[in-house]
Length: 285
Ligand code: PAF
Image (cartoon, rainbow, N blue to C red):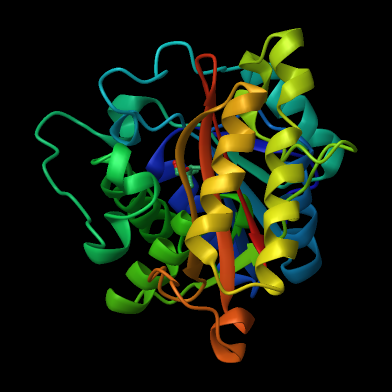
């Protein structure tokens, strides 16, 4: 069993380490990330440490999940800081492959979880979730972990990954871990560092507005009207709205009418832009 952090950047080296660990009956937990690790990621690693003997954290900025006009080239890549953070928290293996290792010449496979990938973020980021599903499938097949942990901030992503694991009979248990927030309510995200000082002050209004509208909706039947009002509040704060929607948490189908049954399973989802920065959030009902 590794005593300190082992850094591997090839699939063969990772497979060899995993094979040896499994041969000595160690359980493996995988935390896939794109690096720029923050407290949210570290909470996933802590969670994995509680559940498994060995924690693998992958750091790979996956080009397939970025659209043409998105922030692939400017996405933060503070690799040494990430390695230091993984060492401090006691992760066992960092998997840091190069793009060519993951997508060699001739790569042409695409994993698509069709229906769940079309709504919410999928509507404005058409290829994003295929990119996520493809890389996560590869990471699960390479690492063959007992469990893999994903943050609930990307709730749609979490559902898509649970679905692909079920559909493809991958023997990994997928676990979600709650959103970690700043003290003012802003959900932690690697993209928060793009916010200017001014935008950073505005950003917590997203969560505050979502909480307010969730409270109001509990006592009202006019969902559309309250969501419209909340969107106006967000626009007045300076956000550009992609969506603010109430959906069922197990299949993301829209909720137009809140009954006692649907309110148990309801979740409020939002994506907005503040300047150039896209922020997403969701809250249970
Ligand atoms: O949530 C992320 O950071 C990424 O989408 C993931 C799951 C690591 C796949 O690249």
